[in-house]
Length: 367
Image (cartoon, helix red, strand yellow):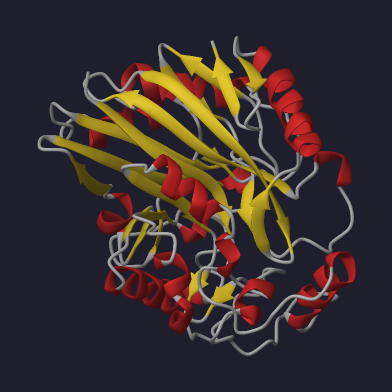
């Protein structure tokens, strides 16, 4: 049986404090209500967990994740890049703006990322010029993108990743207003923007199906990567469940990759297809920020689904619990991995799945 093994994770936010420790930091000035320098976020993290080096190697932030990627060897590596990659100073007055210097693009290459999904609430933080430069920088580095573009056609086009002799992964990236994406960020026939979800209705599902099904070929595997929902809380609304189910039933989607929440949410296997309702964050500069401690936003997961390449059905899912310390991803302790597993088990049982912690500190999904 031919199989495909993927790596997925949630938000990768390489702006602000993270950008400041990379070899080519942007100017530190930011335009938040209470914080005016990105270096403040570095200082807050250092106050919590100790000194953080500067001008770090591009691989530094990935930490132990690189060993896990080498161990698992996924055929495709897909992240939600929630940062503009730009020199632009055309910042939008929206409260929080994420920007990484394009000269730091090697930090994505260091993890051999294949595709960055971009339909999210930070890709346009530095205006349309920032988005256009982001796309150009990523493409020049050999990265595929989905969910944002110079116009509607490009924003709606899937990223296409070939694997094997006759297979492709098609990645569609979409953003919902519930995640903080304003409707005027939607790409148009004449303006850059994101692939915006106006609602989660059956009519929207039919529109997506009208884009997916005509281009899907035998041997293709389709991912819907959706930025939706609030930052905190485990609730998954009935409308969200119906939407994820409908994309699988009617739009040819094989895997639903949800993100926006700052912590992992429940998992479901519906008609043998994996639904990740919220991946949680993977790389960010929140380390020293207080509030919402019960959600353990410092903990995240590497998601390694193994699928039948002929049907797209889920064969197995391995999750590797990780923790951010000193702006570097490291393996979670046994205690923290156990807490995360218990939380995922509690939240997934409502969808008919359960999580089990293995002796190797990896989490397996059962359904």
